[in-house]
Image 1 (spheres, each protein chain N blue to C red):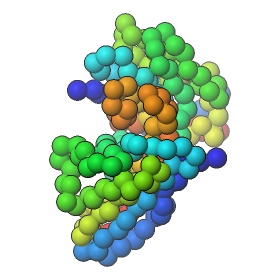
Image 2: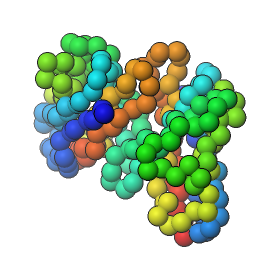
Image 3: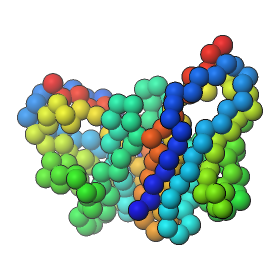
Image 4: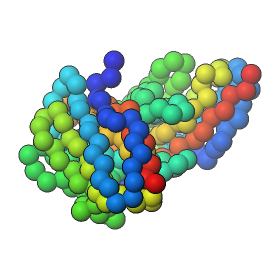
Length: 116
Length: 112
């Protein structure tokens, strides 16, 4: 079964509104989670690293004020797309590595965001 | 920085044909290497992995060998099925950071 759960799986919102996406590790604690973005027919690009108890680390070119990340607990990270615009429409995927030093990364099911 | 280069698709094969999807990487240190598969409308699933040189990852008839000397991790399958139609991503994990760097993905279409 899934070990990382992402919700919602799809969402449609109006321009200017904000959308929150949740990522939960179901049977393990994740001090770090990663958020990726995938444009249609393209690869996944790392957006940011979510750190429990501290600020997220954003990749170059990712607006931290637009993509707010909160790692509220050892099993939950949230990504909020603020003041969404059509160009924010994309597939967002979270992942969490399990275990200290482990090489296995578990992915959420992904969230397809459509901004109209 | 780290990078992954994989062959462009789409790759179109007939059922039972042999599959190779090339993947090469650039990284500092000794990364772990992965192949992920994405079926239409779904998220990523780990297909196989290798964590050190000369390791061979295998799953569902797919194989890939970690070749440090050629910095490659080519995906192979001896006989593909229609159900293998998907997008395949090669990726590496920097063990220090544990984030993944992905290749561009290769779409495989298997025809009956």
